[in-house]
View 1 (cartoon, rainbow over the protein chains, first blue to last red):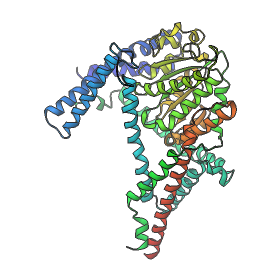
View 2 (cartoon, rainbow over the protein chains, first blue to last red; view 1 turned 135 degrees about the vertical axis):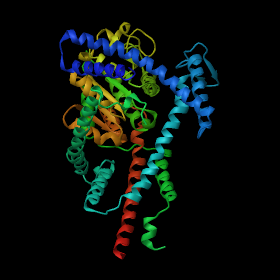
View 3 (cartoon, one colour; view 1 turned 180 degrees about the vertical axis):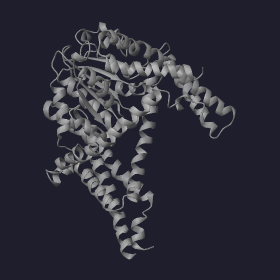
View 4 (tube, helix red, strand yellow; view 1 turned 135 degrees about the horizontal axis):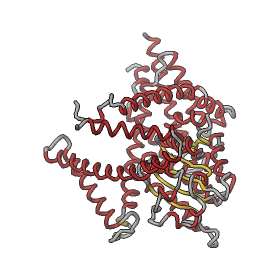
Length: 219
Length: 287
């Protein structure tokens, strides 16, 4: 029963999703709209509650059992509680029930987002440039014909996309566009076809109950 | 240590230091670098430009803080273009963590225009000139649902107003009233817009994406599924250039200012790769 019900549900849901693209008849489309616009949104709301509950449970459990790096779970819980309090009382943009400010610093979600989330996330991503430069220097060696081709194409694109590309030759930016539009697209299209076939196969396996890893419970 | 060994094993701290210098110095002393717009960006600009008075354009700001530096200038450039030419705009985000960035971009550009406005007609008025729809999960719901009715999917806007009571929304009902959707994202969201909204409702989709994901999107641009394409900081700078050259919109051009940093960073990386390969050749000749 624990497996049969979810498998039946996924079969019906999967089938309904596919049928909506195959049967354009208005009588079915009304039903399809109800599934997407009402049912799916209600399910999403449940998913948010479940996700929050799961997040809290995992980190409380980590602290209780003193698992590796359990101290960081405190940070997460404090940040979680802090932003919830700010959001509940300060609102999204100083429109909450109890808007509070210290000087020009407004306690609301937008201020937290702009002053904490954006700088932290941007800084983490900016570090990639340094790792990429170091990795390119160490790994990009002309060891074979294929590596040479890759290196030459990379140099042309790297220089061609820069403003100075036009100064070197007025044909260079156009040539870069050709590389992106023709050889790149040829390779990409093959990859996209492969991925699409893989997605269809995996989706069919899930709908038909052959692939059951999503049910959990396994090793 | 032999010369080839030195060339092949430069300390990573030296690489990091040089890269830090070439990236930050042009940002500390910024100057706008003129770029020549390429055809993918020109096509997007033309598509936005051709939006008629009876239609609106949708700006999907689904970019996260990680890629803000690359994609936010695109949002600002498209908003400046649309507001300057008095196009009606609907702004939305498909994920909640991106709402804050969309708010920033709208507030900045509306502030720029309204600070120079002389009359009520000149000003940008919420509900008359633009609407911020906010966020509606999961993404497939707005993608497909807006094809039937926008105000049924976004019953209230981001600020809690009933969407169908807003002046602009009297004429904008579904995708039939949308000229183009510009999806700004670093993920595969633009492809989902094509798969759902374009295939079923024929919605025109333009894209602004990071340089890393640009190569993935060219097949869709080549087939015409993407009307136009802005790739990375350079794409944003090209759009800024088109907006200023065609409409004289003045404002800080963040992407164009970053072009020098980008140029020096690319040249530094190329230089390091060349040095590494010289060392590699010398080493191979000795063997």
